[in-house]
Amino acid sequence: MTQAHHNHSWRNLLPTPRESRLTRAWPRIILATSLSVAVTYIERVRHLETYSLTTTPFTILGVAISFFLGFRNTTAYNRFWEARTLWGRIINTTRSLARQILTQSAPAGAFASDCGREREKPEPKRSSDATVLSAEMQELRTWQEMMVSLIIGYAHALRHHLLGSDAFPDLQSRLSRADTERLRGQDNVPLALLYRMGLHLREARQRGWVTAQDVRSIEDSLTQLTDAQGGCERIKNTPIPLTYTLLSHRIVTFFCCALPFGLIDTVKMLTPLVVFLVSYAFIGLDVLGEEISDPFDTQPHSLPLPALTATIEKNLQQMLEEPA
Image 1 (tube, one colour):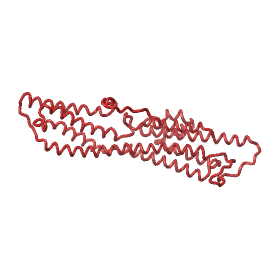
Image 2 (cartoon, rainbow, N blue to C red; image 1 turned 120 degrees about the vertical axis):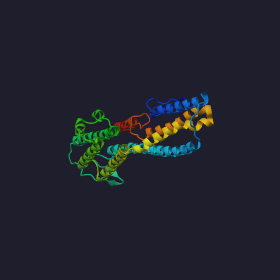
Image 3 (spheres, rainbow, N blue to C red; image 1 turned 90 degrees about the horizontal axis):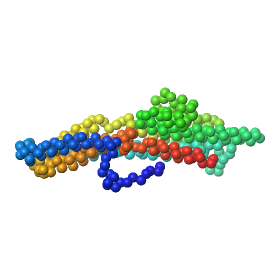
Image 4 (cartoon, rainbow, N blue to C red; image 1 turned 90 degrees about the vertical axis):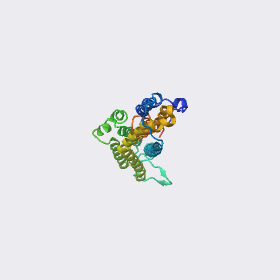
């Protein structure tokens, strides 16, 4: 997949995209900073008595929060990376599956060598009419194109299945009308497409276009797609428990809002600045864990599923354009 060059200059990393969930951190950061400004004004400007604390409890609590946020963010990133690994496997398997379909199928009357042995195919046709073989080769080519189209449709259907969107606008432009109508009413459209590929593979075996050994290798690829899809569905349907998110939100917000009372006697007029920096770090890490915990989303930092499926479609279409 060809990707645009990402400019990681520090000037380009300073702004936060408006679509990112990191923008949700600002209300809590502003709340903690505003509270620190009020405490500093009352204590250092108005010289009114305020309740102050030592830095010891904040040091202990800060270390505990750091470990908690680190564990939660590590778990979230592991989910993100596992999802990317599964989609890498899907890309490789769809390429292998298309290659197997295009190279391991031949007309029933043709002979090909496989490791020095004749392929296990029915007896060649005894007809002297060359148009019979030509017609069968055309039927085989149609079958190959249909199978590759089903693989491309599967990639797009899986993307929509994980994002919870409608897959049929994409499927109608890539599959035949008959195959598209058979998918209507299916709860799991990608699984239904794998089933259709299995049926078409059985038909090819019955017509002698693929050998029993080739059927097993193609079935292995279909099984790998099923396993990868199951892994993606597990990540999608099993989010990080809500209690983790609620606890991290509340404890981080409480810590940042209470921080001015522990710093006012130590850093004095610099309390708002220190509170701002600490709250930006802690609240930012809190929101970051939430953002990457769901890789199958439409957020800008989620997995680029449209780009991944476009890569699969482009690669497989180029395979079809190669001479047989």
